[in-house]
Structures are given as C-alpha cells and as structure tokens.
Length: 100
Image (cartoon, rainbow, N blue to C red; front, side, top):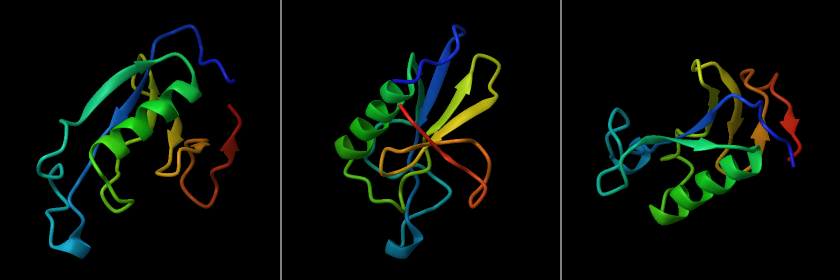
C-alpha cells in the first residue's frame, strides 16, 4: 500500500450535474453531500473515501469530478478515478496507474 509523504495529503470529494440528464454541470449535484477535501494517509484511503462518496451519493461517472489528491500546499500528486484506481496527475493519455 503506497504511503503518501509525511506531510498532510487530502482528497477532493466532488460532484456536478450531468448534462446528459439535463443537470447543471457547473454546480454540485442537487441532494448530494457537499463537495469537500478530506485528509488521507495513503492512496488506498483516498480511493476508499472516493468510493464511499460515489456510492453514498449514488453518482454516475458523469457526476464524478473529485479524486484529486493534493499535498499540504495544494499540488496535485495523484488522481482517483471513478473506478477507484489511482493515477499519476498528468492528463490522459499520459497518466499512468499507481499501485497501492
């Protein structure tokens, strides 16, 4: 299980409306938990937090915009996708999967 650096790390939990269903893509999905940043110690913890947020709010992949894992300074150090995988922060298709 990959440990994050000793400095605090956070994962973004966030939703938006899906325009395919005539929902507002510029606002959090109505009725969901508020978008937030939560502290994590490992990528596994980050993935688990994202999964709980996705399942708990009944989000589809078009609603999920969270998953950025940041260090204490706000630098993105990884991304968690809708399926729970951890990725390097480079944009697709240059990102690579991270083991945890």
